[in-house]
Length: 177
Ligand SMILES: *[C@@H]1O[C@H](CO)[C@@H](O)[C@H](O)[C@H]1NC(C)=O
Ligand SMILES: *[C@@H]1O[C@H](CO)[C@@H](O)[C@H](O)[C@H]1NC(C)=O
Ligand SMILES: *[C@@H]1O[C@H](CO)[C@@H](O)[C@H](O)[C@H]1NC(C)=O
Ligand SMILES: *[C@@H]1O[C@H](CO)[C@@H](O)[C@H](O)[C@H]1NC(C)=O
Ligand SMILES: *[C@@H]1O[C@H](CO)[C@@H](O)[C@H](O)[C@H]1NC(C)=O
Image (cartoon, rainbow, N blue to C red; front, side, top):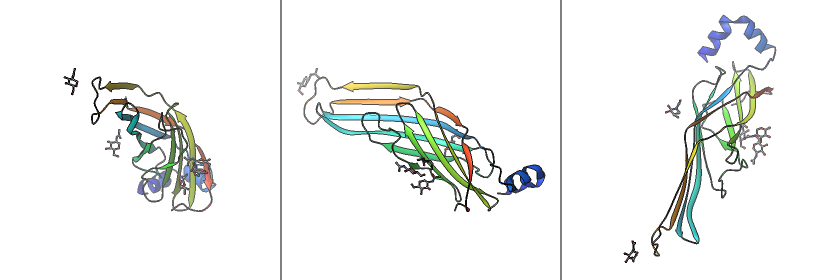
């Protein structure tokens, strides 16, 4: 907030633009995008545990949304775990709300973030994008399996990825709390 006020004081032109309702610019940067997936078969016919885990750090270039926001979700929709069909909520600071969806087949994200500036106006940034993740697939089978042992495991582990989204910004009525 102090940073925002200082910038407004130094840049009366920018302040004028914002007070006239012009959307404040912002880019959303997803960094350290981490995807991991595992499937464990306890018998040849029984998938005992499975799940996908998506994690990333989000920053908004707009000074009204300072700091790193951490986003993560667990998906259990076989066989790719995430198909973009659920909204997940990121751990956002007070006055900010962030939701995302993730689609594993395309590594596609949609993001919505709301915040207020100077305690007066509220904005919604809405955007989408997809990225390439470099993933390693490993599997293991117990060739001499007997009941009570693990039969088969499959893992997907991806190197950290990054994605920059230029969202559409709209002013929304009221202040977001
Ligand atoms: C990602 O966020 C975590 C805390 O949520 C932090 O420890 C880590 O340094 C961040 N990584 C980057 C690249 O900013
Ligand atoms: C996700 O949230 C938006 C509002 O932000 C809502 O319109 C949409 O129906 C939600 N989708 C699901 C699958 O819950
Ligand atoms: C983002 O907002 C749009 C428009 O309200 C909505 O259709 C979409 O489902 C929302 N997505 C998320 C992840 O909240
Ligand atoms: C996020 O999702 C929640 C629950 O669906 C909704 O109340 C909120 O308006 C959404 N926020 C954004 C920024 O899409
Ligand atoms: C396979 O399992 C049987 C029974 O536990 C054991 O006797 C045998 O030595 C095992 N063979 C190998 C190759 O591990």
